[in-house]
Image (cartoon, rainbow, N blue to C red; front, side, top):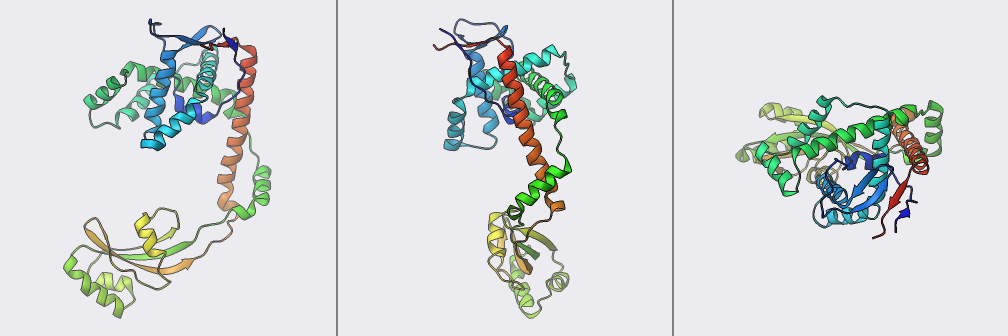
Length: 309
């Protein structure tokens, strides 16, 4: 016996991730209706297609056991998300939203560019029981969903400067810069020249002067722990003191020597430095709350039944 759908669960990130896997298709014998949402149905094929796309999306960031763990955790409320996505799409169609096919093509091109060739792209889709038409349909529906959410919710969210300031004052101690370094580096491409360059640096601490003398690439950057440096380079430069040189570090086919010109300790960040970050946090919080409220209202106004079989 079907049951009324009781659960309220949704985030904008799920809307974007799901790409709404409800491309119309005939109900084949192996399909099973697992939910009814107003005049639409959700079948077992919709559910399985959703899982396929979920895996494709998450595989760009996760792999192996971590990927499987993420998928298993999201399975717990997967049908809830499918139902909410269906409601959003129905609202978009009621509003008469039309998506520019050029935007659909651009989305398709983004996906296609991840593959080395047209054939590799089509083969990957075929292995998962999909076609380009499937992808285009789902991209179109994703854009419809985002458009209605923008109009109904996102465009109405306001975060005023007073809210940003109040959040900063309440959480000021949390806004600190990480430890930093001002780093100079010399790149040595000829291994036979390395000893001579090291000797020159020991005699003359002017790294730029040594780089000019031997016509070597020289650079100076400001970097912070956990930032843009590779793990290998970060470990080297954060383990030496101010004014000190590192041992040569081989990266690819070249050797790099680093000098810590200045150590910059953690400091409290000012409001102007973090106001954009705070605005984003407050905006997303309001967006999430408004989205949940809107979806709860849609559910109350809709006929939703889920099969227990």
